[in-house]
Length: 475
Image (tube, rainbow, N blue to C red):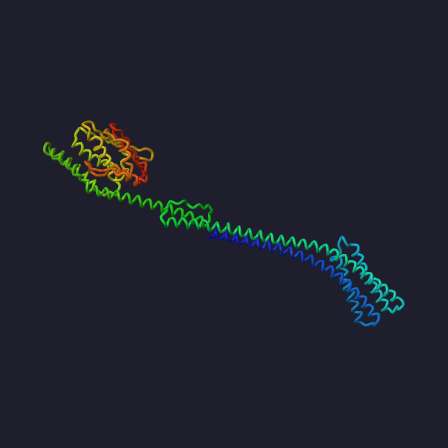
């Protein structure tokens, strides 16, 4: 399940990244807004702290001048240090290009206040009674200016904050809309991807289910499932398609084998019932009797041996294929018997190349064809009846032709041999096998798994040519 597992991992990873990406974007935007608010608040707090600490610095100085206690002096230096720190914070917290001059003046005022309070404390501690009151008054004046400037800066900050607040409110509203849009788009994409991904999994599974149901009810000729992706479902689909093709092939083979077995049973039954056909056997034995009466025993013995071999061959196992040379030998035995009976009225020619003789064919293939040519073709001729068998190779096939110069047949009779639905009446008169051409044709088609294996050319009065096109490789 590696490929399908990878797809699932990629899908959920993409979903995780997408959702978290939206969350991180909204979080960072919110963090930036909060940072800007904090910065504005720090500016307000710094100005407020400077105002309070400067007041505390001046008050602690006055208290020391009145009471001369060490605690007041300690408080003064503490507030003085804090005010100095706040003075340094002005540059990084409040000062910018827009307020550089007023903030710079404000910074100078703070420095002047610190300086005047230091001088006042120094004069007081050196007991210059006549000098420090003027410095004390100057410190108070600087404190007043400082407080006024603080209020002025606070007012400017509030004015700036008001415009900034309106801008931030608009931005926040836009971010809300953007966040909602991103969430909606993300939800839509997740639903779309989920639908597509689930369809990619469920659709071939549903197709496999439907195809399996068709096979279960016996419908084997359904269309193959098309799935081009090379994953587990692709492997399963390809395997299922191959399995269905194999089932169809197996079913076809079973049908063909069943039909072949039926034909073999038919052959066996006819072999038992008709192989020793009374009319054929009577004529043969009558001929043997005449020869025994007229001639010596050698030719009679030859005729009896030919008949024995013919009957033995016809009674052999019908399900096993034989070589072409065995079929030709049986045909020669059959024609020897007929030649003995009809004399010079009939002739037989055999011209088959040696490279064809080892070809395997179904048993009793040529003999029924030759018998049919003899009985229905040349038997009625008074003189010159000829049956010729030729064989040669042609590319990957062996071509066998059985030709006679008999009475021929019409198109209807010729076509009836290939019509399985039309059961031609078989009288079996004169046949040693009792098998018709339909049986031979169908057995050849089943044996070689081909339809284009049997051809008949015939015209009334111009004889008949039966052509067999047999694959070299056999069945």
